[in-house]
Image (cartoon, rainbow, N blue to C red; front, side):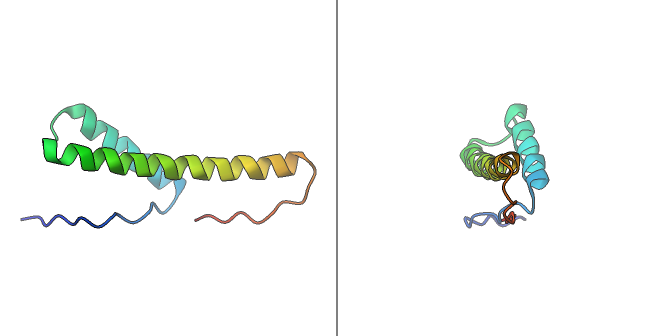
Length: 79
């Protein structure tokens, strides 16, 4: 018997982990096998993961711009 928690899942450990989780969510959503009650939660988790990925990509893009401008690289904080 599984217990469901309404607490938000922990953020992904890395960009690669987030992408992997997104791929799994998409496969589950596309399968059409998820109960209606789970669809919204899975969709919301996917939106959180997508936002995480976009934020990480933006941080890397900003760092590349600094390097391209000949500036000293600022430390990148992987959150």
